[in-house]
Image 1 (cartoon, helix red, strand yellow):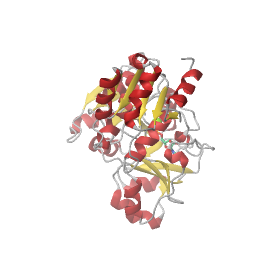
Image 2 (cartoon, protein in one colour):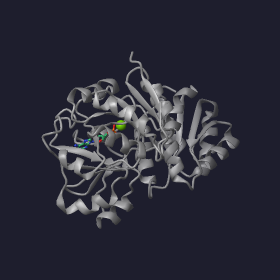
Image 3 (cartoon, rainbow, N blue to C red):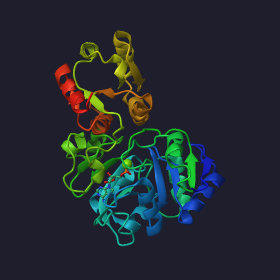
Length: 359
Ligand code: AMP
Ligand code: MG
């Protein structure tokens, strides 16, 4: 067990001395959990192979799943990666922001960080604490999401502390992340979304002047065949409790639950409106993510909501579908993965899944 130092830092006006204290850990080759605008990350000096090895170890992360490297300037990015000249101006304009680019890696970056690939994932985070931490460390910081492999990402310090206290040297507590979903990942050799995130498809199209490619992996409907982006593996954010995605008419769900006689065995995760309606109609327990009209709030609460499911000791969960525009596209990608592609629209389909689970 490590003696983990928890440092509280203001998310908007980071206290300099506290950031410096955290940065010292990075410089010394140690691990620091820190907030970004997307989620919390487990960071280490990206140029220090041994420090990065420790990230894989404590996460239980397969060695073929590469890390995202976080930078605080374009110059820092260019030290470790080849930024295509044709996109330089766009990137200058849109960074810092919740978008990660896959570009050709330079030799300086250890092979372990990029899992032996020729490319590297780089991002300049917009969170003031993350940016200051990188600046004060003076090195790029490799940081995957702060969760044991396969568990929902930590979107606040409390969950990060629960997961990793005693396993890392330092945890920065700056409250909740702003978006609550991991960054968008875009390849630049051909503009293709590997993982949708808070920087939306629509925004990419405006910034780059062309529509990005999107396939069923980005939609969360299929898993990547090769380990080019292992984060696109199908079952990635799944709770231990079976979770099913309801893709039918919201008004009909109460009837399905009644017909099944299952109101006490399940938890419904969804918008405030749907939760209220369903609880009233069936008496089932619910986890509210936020009002239907505020997809940013739904996104922020999504991982926490899903991770609550396991603490509620029920047989299964049902989660609602959301509009796929804007950040809704990333929300649905995470929901499809959390439910391992098990979606239903009627009683028959749900019963089949439940039978398989031995319900
Ligand atoms: P995480 O930070 O845990 O959310 O995971 C980082 C994501 O970035 C994973 O989905 C990785 O597969 C992806 N990634 C990192 N480096 C690369 C790369 N060079 N090419 C493709 N995907 C990458
Ligand atoms: Mg992750």
